[in-house]
Length: 113
Length: 115
Image (cartoon, rainbow over all chains, first blue to last red; front, top):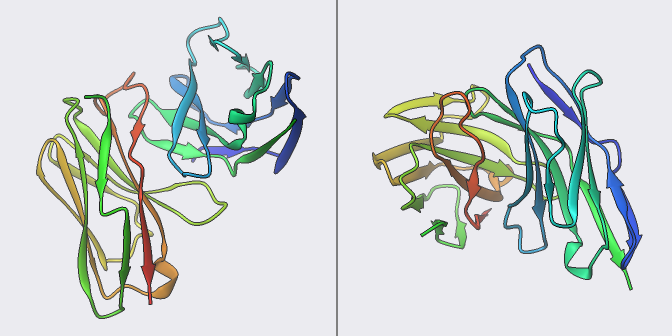
């Protein structure tokens, strides 16, 4: 079974600064996807960024980028130029080749003015 | 239409009640999911419906029963629930379940309280 570990329960960042969230996973599969989802207080799950395991190039989406280290099974998320609207719980998720997801415990991001 | 809708938004029920949660998507997705999420915890997969086949997380009690009337609609029937079943119930859909299925789209959730 796959496991996803987020070791940072909470991270605080000032507006306009950069914060990096860590995620590690364990799998024996070679074909899988990794995701970061954001869940604001409304509790709507919003996809932030997606990475296919077979792609070496790190995914980027505007101010969000990942550092995907396949051999180390590490998948960190960098939020640049942080904004107040970035405050939310961030979940790292592993999707297997059949589309089933396993989520990490989550990291609460607090953005201070 | 790129959204997943869920009704009701909030539901309060007694332990002897029977109720249903509804989830709908019109994106032509072929896989739909039910998750349970307790406060400050990650979502936990309950059921997956794809191509009329149901896949169950074996830890889910039988008082929860999914139903898929058609490819765009997924219901979750609730019967004889316990207070510990109070949670946010999230529905999601994805284009398909096969390899390289990609991302899941989530609905806004139903907040369920069992008294």
